[in-house]
Image (cartoon, rainbow, N blue to C red):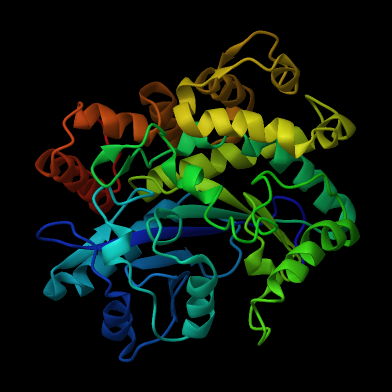
Length: 406
């Protein structure tokens, strides 16, 4: 079934399974699936939410079971499933941990691939790319799927998403620490994302997708180069072009949707859904052409958008935006921080947002990205004891569906 712009939404949330006693990762998603299903499976339909395995054995994905029209109470639905998983894993000394990276994981030693359904695909990825790096085995994100109907809607949506991708990490960055060290990037997940497929650069491109606004052009300029580049490695032809495409937003013509992938997972579903709502409402504003024409949106080359994105993944909401041409897209005429730009955009779209989500968005805008709050909680003490203390609080935030404030 095809849907029109912003008629329905699909949201996917990825979480780590960790030991409840010491917060070390535990590659036991297969155990979770068995406890829930009675046998190992890659997907479990749990009413309106589906559970799925991922590339590595310690990450589980929760997602809307098909498109949903309802965002208002979606956080509570996800939270209910999180509590169920934690209850199931109680006897295994395991529970879910939020944020886009584990701060102490050593992926060289601790990474374990999923070994069950679809394992041949993951094994091939590992053979080509060596998935022991942080960019493969220590990353959790939220994926936001937005529908389109036909080429016209695809072009409008793709143009708007390309523009907005550059500043999304200013809201969502939650990965400032790898292996007990500050990385220098508030969004370390996106920093490693840029290069984790360097062996076949056609797959990620410049993260910001190319200027393609029709299905035909997308196939020619994105899918065909990917298929050509992967062919020598994928001799059995088991890899799907939709999954090989690793840009920050990917066209899923198999389900007529664009999937946004630059959003770090937060400390609780309340935060994730609030960020999704603000992104959706801002995209509606861009698509409406109230601020800027479609042609002016299409005019932006990925290199120019990537330059902004590259700054934002380092400093998130604190990034000083100096490209006035970009700011003019949003009717902003003076240099400002990425956080201030989001405050401006929120004021423009807040009438379309419910009081519940307004409250959450206002918390994030006032207190900064989760990465900023994590570093504030760490307070320059990168000992394992201090890091575990902060991340124990984040685990509690996930269990209670509450924000983290150091």
